[in-house]
Length: 481
Ligand code: NAD
Image 1 (tube, rainbow, N blue to C red):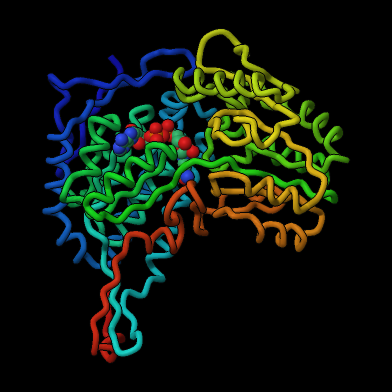
Image 2: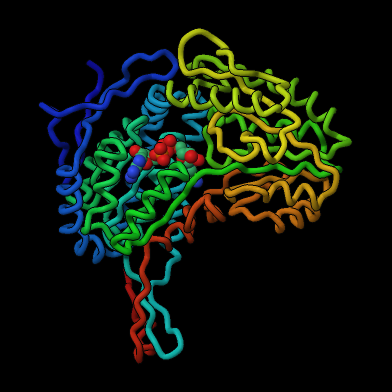
């Protein structure tokens, strides 16, 4: 049998003997990659109790020591980069080159930026007549998805540990094996018992009891809008702090002066990378009507670069989707777009190759705002092209969404592009293809989430503020670590 992993609780790996398991399949060929224990409420309780015990000690640990632990995690990720990339490729299908550079590389960069934010942090300040002190938020429940699993774990784990919080992590049951390596790295680092737990399992078995546990002070969740709402409602029952990073239906606006070839390559790159399973992917593109024909033809030509293939090959640009279930969902979205009258210009619902959770990179044109493809997150490589007549119309189409995660603007004139960016109701906007910046805040407007991750603001999410009235004069004598 392949690798079978138990929970990591109170500084020790738990037995897998006699436990129910969740099998992890390779989406490229259906083979068994490994298995993790299917956790339950008792596992959650053990992990949270250990975290509650560990919290005072970790909260009192000087910043220098917290930074040393997170630097140790970053060094562990770097040392095991190839193994992590191979694990990600096997469990969720990211092409190996992308897994190494983007999936693992971004996770390491996340930690570097969070460490810089923690170093620059001033934990006490004179404000009015008071001394204002920042303190760790407490016991954090971190729940993560499968699409950039290591990156999403590091944004939460790194920031929380640096802030002085303790963490119970529930990684996605679809791609949990990278989190098992993270637990091994922590174990080798002599992370104090209870400071980090990794509890494997699904939403019902582990996610729900974890959010509901009275020992948890804060829930940080990345995943779908629907589950995010459930998590927020459940956390609200205990008035727990909540941070949510949810889905998106982000629009790229191609202005009339934008170079067609660059905007086509950039939009397809954003939409199709990671097989379209990127929350901030540009999945709608708004093109001036006069340019629409040329843009579409260039896109049909460009799509050939995204031929699905074996994700273990370094030349492969697009792997399978993360699971057979995800393939079924994406195919249903493609069929719905056809039924709604969108014009298929590339790809389609037929599998591109036999076996595996593969789909064709797909482009629809004439996508109208009342079609499902315009409004619903597909989470697969499906692009919706919509023509516009005026800039105001383009901006209103871009903003015509329940989501507000990201956006893009292409123009030969950067100032003009930024003026458009300022009118978008989204948490991030990329100018002329600029991608994710993990040194700057990342998060959503509207139903794309609450709060920000990454960099200084991502670190600050895990802090509480205490105002000590009448003590402004003591601000200078702070934490000297
Ligand atoms: P999901 O919402 O199905 O699951 C996310 C996590 O929540 C998993 O660990 C899952 O086990 C857990 N979960 C499920 N039900 C739960 C419950 N009732 N209580 C507590 N936890 C529960 O999402 P997914 O399919 O793993 O990931 C894809 C989604 O994530 C997409 O919608 C995507 O847009 C979103 N996403 C958002 C961001 C972002 O930063 N905004 C990043 C990546 C992915």
